[in-house]
Amino acid sequence: TRAPLPVPRLELADRGGLAPPAAPPQPMALGPFAERRLTRTLVLDRRGRYRAGPVEVAFGDPFGLFEIRRRVHGGRRFVVYPREARVTSLPLRCRQPFGRVPTRLRAHQDPTSIADVRPMVPGDSPRFIHWKASARRGELHVKEFELRASTEIMLVLDMQQAVQAGTGGRCTDETAASLALGIARFALRRDLPVGLLALSSRRVRLAPGRGRRHLWELRERLVDLQPDGTVPLARWLAREAAALTPASSLVVITPRLDRTLARLLLRIRRGGVDVIVLHLLAETFDAGRGPEPFRAGLRDMMAAHGIAVLGLGADGQGWDALQETPPEAGVPGVR
Image (tube, rainbow, N blue to C red):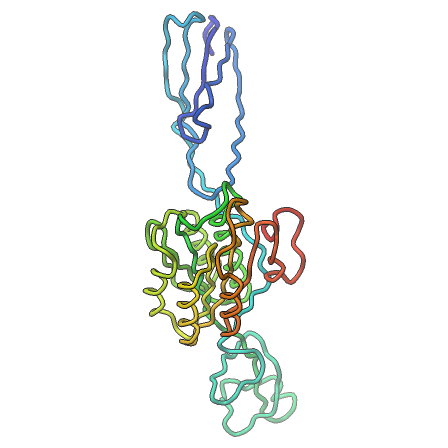
């Protein structure tokens, strides 16, 4: 205060919605020409877009006979991004494998990685002549490049509200977002295109792409993706499956594995699309939940048809399948 008189009663209240609903205003008093600074720490364990403030100030006489209220600080907006799961390995079947391939397959050569230099033979393209080696050896030599693995990763997230388990940051939808971001980072390191497909209260689709800018766009989509969907995964994914190509690798992240979903994924797999299921074990996120009926049989059936099913628990169960080296201390598989 800049006045020579004290303020016997002063209360501060955050009207931005981040304070607990039952949190009472913070009362205090100020002497003449006094100043007081309050610091508040917010712990937010869920991704999303938040606003702190505005702050409402109430002051008056110590007996409560009169009171004046004013709002100060219009509020600050900030974003909480999902934590990035540590993914250094993924059982992908690349459309174009490493090494030599049969002549009926078209190799994708990486011009940034030279594997060998050899004498030129009839049929070699002049574009690949290695002029320095040719001048040094007195005959034409051409460059051979490494064959780079290629596939197109499409992340599918189950955001149906009815199948989620857990609370706060320890829940299936937060873990799914963390996994999606970790896999996107994994794809970025390997220069593989990655996209996103989900249905919450609205449809979310991000076409596969590469690079850091695309990774940032995917992360922004994950911030706004909330578990408020009403349509089962198998129902809406059946409509989206027509857009998939044999060049795709479908990575499905879901807390529920049932017969309807298993049949759909088998049909997609028969169409030539690689399918990986990251099954979040709901009972490890919520002690009141039990495993789905016929889970073991469904997993065995899908594995027999070339679908990799990885069960991932909140307690770290199964996470080693996504990691080439042990994770750091802390939340299993999440950094």
